[in-house]
Image 1 (tube, helix red, strand yellow):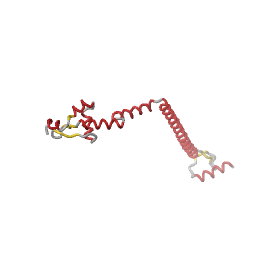
Image 2: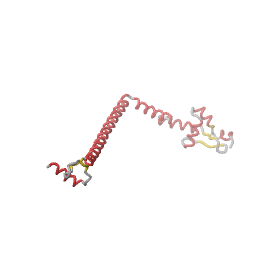
Image 3: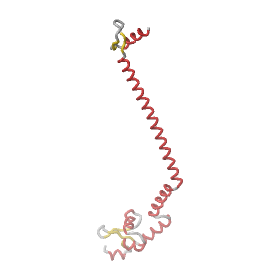
Length: 164
């Protein structure tokens, strides 16, 4: 089918449709491919054509809904920016950030406390073990101080003998 035959059938090119109705040819082609607008592929599936009636139908339907796709996207982006930049929204956001900062600070302090207590306990246990190992005892036989290498129950007997 040649372009003359298509024009007789009422089809117009996307370029002509864009000039008449104010949309870009790419957008009109996208509407045709999505099925929102009546159209036809010509020239061995290279180009698209549509009818003025289909374009007018689409425009009437778009006016009934009140917003086009571009307007909907712009509205949601505008609403998002308005919410983020709104004074109340930014005030709530700043309060939330302060609360999160305080909670994290408290958590870090609690963690530091428990780690300090555990480290202190470990250091005390090591000091006690070293003290017991290096404590000299007095031998009852010759009166000299010698380190005790005996087992723990025997040490307790020696310490109890010294306390008497």
